[in-house]
Length: 423
Ligand SMILES: [Zn+2]
Ligand SMILES: [Zn+2]
Image 1 (tube, rainbow, N blue to C red):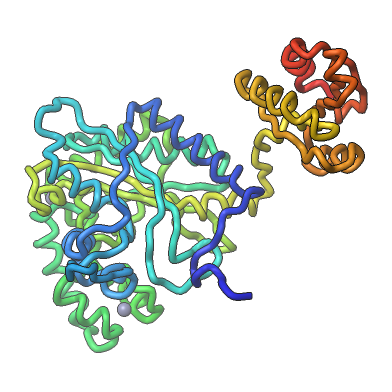
Image 2 (image 1 turned 120 degrees about the vertical axis):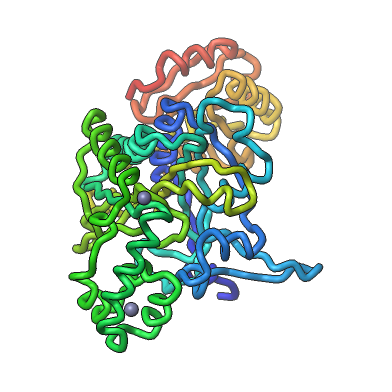
């Protein structure tokens, strides 16, 4: 074997694509019902965009980015997540300037992170995201949270729970950081090296550390949620009230801080019981400062993102049977080369009627071609040979019913349409 897919990547095979289509169709449907428009941004961006927006001292930027220099020496990176590109697009194109309603956008596509591959975690993975840009109102936070919730419900993902928190605004966070720093400094030397560095630059980040010692040390740390300013506290109260009005069940978890620098106020995660442990399917939050930070206007925004692999994996684990996609409907079997033109004409007529059809190998035996019908789960075979050409009557076999009829050439499409689904 000469080549294999790079470590941490994988192929989506024909027999698996139905799973992707299934969840993608639900995403399309729900985002459309809430009037969100799809956007597609480049797969690579300036490296600096992610360093600024995701944050220099995050695992993503420090360890996990695919970075490269192009032939002109520009520093670029494959996108590790989607929100930075959306914020860059809004800032660059001034998209929010003339609109009174918030801008409602969604995206889906591959993201790239150099992390240790494991089940459900890949170096190229697929994410979708929903972003509402231009409104500071708590109802919009609730709308975003509800869309993600509804997508998971509609997709029948089992045992999902929703946890929400507030990470405050720059005002209350500055005051809180001092409190938190004082707490962390008491046991400064006991934390891992990363955390010791992080407590200087961004002490909130210590909550993200996966190290067990750090996790244990931080259990009794003061929480942002207990130290919100009045405006942030009021905002959080209304988000909770609006979620109740929308019948979206949630619990408050003060540990949800999200790994990225740009979040303000609301932060949330959708959790599942994943491979025996609680894990996040995705989440999001408000990022009121990001667009301005990237050179745009001061535009408030809120969004979510979720990984498709984990949604699919949790459905597979629950034994969910994904809806089958359409098989080939008609296999046209020319009996000898003289029937090839008539077979191709028949195929093109069927395509015009939106019926899938291909022409079989005219040199293969009828028996072999009929065997292929069974193998490929074909519904009908149309046999065209010398006799059929003369009489204008084609033999149509209903493969599943194991019956056959002679049908006038011009009536074949009607015949297939009326017998469709009859097995
Ligand atoms: Zn605040
Ligand atoms: Zn640590």
